[in-house]
Amino acid sequence: MDIVAKYLEPRIASQLATMELRARLIVEGFLTGLHRSPFHGFSAEFSEHRAYHPGDDLRYLDWKVLGRTDRYYVKQFEEETNLRAVIAVDRSASMAYGSDGSVTKFTYATYLAAALAYLAMLQKDAVGLALYDDTLETYYPPRARRSYIGQLLAVLDRAMPSQTTDTARSLELLAERLNRRSLVIVISDFFDDLERIATSLKHFRHDHHDVIAIQVLDRRELDFRFGIAATFRDMETGEEMITQPMQLRAAYSDAVNRFVEQLKAICYAANIDFVQAITDQPFDRTLREYLVRRQRVR
Image 1 (cartoon, rainbow, N blue to C red):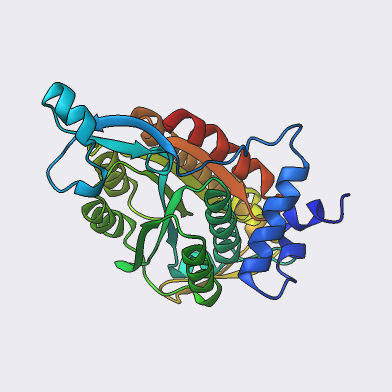
Image 2 (tube, rainbow, N blue to C red):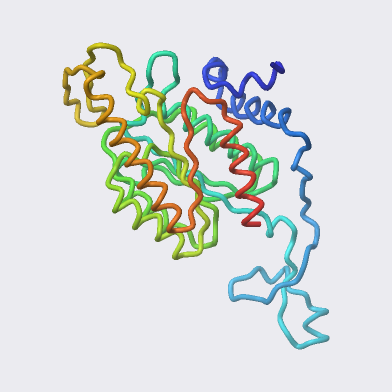
């Protein structure tokens, strides 16, 4: 394995000292795996004209076009045509779970969010960050400055899981903050009321935002291989139950599969991209999904 590409492995990335270093090496490891780099770069050079809208900066008004056509146009620069992305990370207590040998779902989510932000920086896209539990805890609006990415990564590095969750309410509050078309990337286990989540996701689509729903799960949440006996504790309420996993495995697997399929169906019906990320898998799969989606919404 390439010495940089190895940092696509979650457990290896977790050994790095800072979020900025993790993000950089995850992205560099990802890029070494591509046959050709899609990152051709952008400049802030003139791209095209667009009609003037009230509130536009008058410095960019094209007076020559006004003189010739008696119409108001502003110069649109290449950086204005790039993507605006907002990465929303679930920091509720259920995200703190991690089985033996795996990073927690929240750790995986923050590393993934950091890598996506770093990719956005390489593309000179504007990127913002939201952290939520039962409300919109933290919100940084999209910016394209390189120094801003460092600020976002520092926030992710300090973030910790909280307690209860209300994904639907938090996403509704986020939707109210977005006044321009954006790509909204929601990273969560989505362990909440799916009907209400569906309503909040559709709110983004109604406002013409593009959405990627990334469901982060631990491998044990899918296969329920916990041995002969185990004590289960609700991460949000603290309630405990002693049971025999082998007897429950079939019923549990059916319930989890139904939940995931319902979430997929919600996303499909609303024209939302769905990606499932497992915490023992390298990060490159999800990063590829991001690049595919990015090309669609440019």
